[in-house]
Length: 64
Image 1: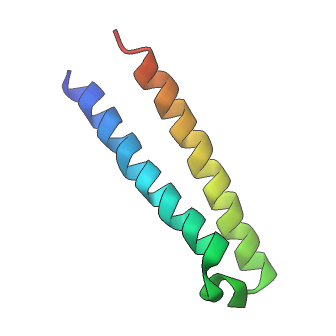
Image 2 (image 1 turned 90 degrees about the horizontal axis):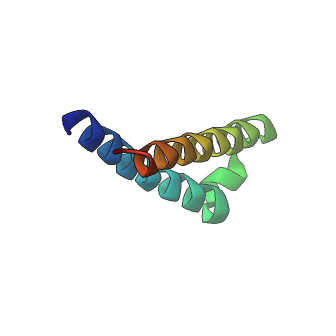
């Protein structure tokens, strides 16, 4: 169904963003140059994005 396809696409897009942010946090000198507060914000953002992705995965697994 169309709404299910949108959820799948949303998860794919989100997972791509998660991968990019994870790489940025893990291996980017620019990230290391940010102050601790901003680094913490980005880590929190990644945590929430991963949680959101897990919810979407659960929704997709339970599509009829």
